[in-house]
Image (tube, rainbow, N blue to C red; front, top):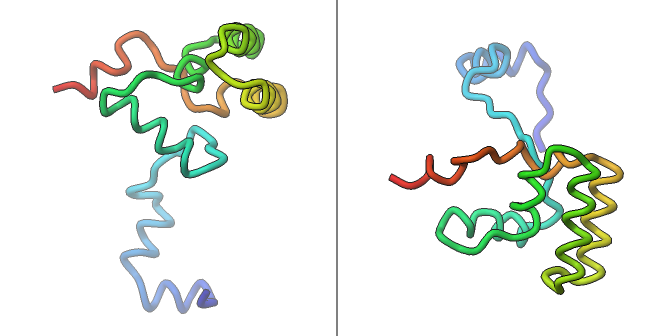
Length: 113
């Protein structure tokens, strides 16, 4: 990685510096994925795949509701014990919104055109 002093960076890349300082073209990251595979699974739903545990969790309002959902999915065999434990741990440590913003009614319809 190249080390730059701020003034040197500003002088060499004035437009990029301005965009960074003014936060132009910035996006907010609302979710945490622990693997590239899980990120790909999340995108699969948008391509017409079946929703997974994280998709259901993102519809929950509270951590307690999300834990009950994980318990239910585990009891039906839709997630393994290890996966359920990992989901519960993330909910307990970081909260339900660590999976992404709440998916409201009509979430997927905005992707279908």
